[in-house]
Length: 79
Image 1: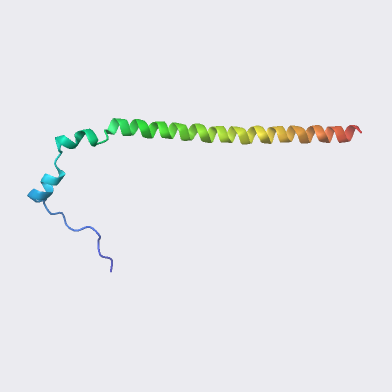
Image 2 (image 1 turned 90 degrees about the vertical axis):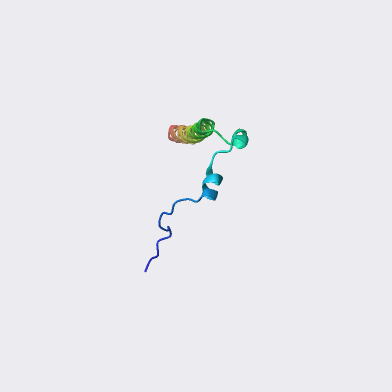
């Protein structure tokens, strides 16, 4: 029989509420959501740019290789 990993909801005590309360002296050390969101967004954009660049390089190499093969094939046929 599976035992649920979460217990029933119990109201927080005074100590837990005090620990979860916002402390103004620690405010300058916390990350703000907008800054974190912007940083994640920049990371996502850079990842997309790098992947697109890699795909482009693979495409260019494949096209150049195909051109060399077709030129070599036509050169062999002309001999």
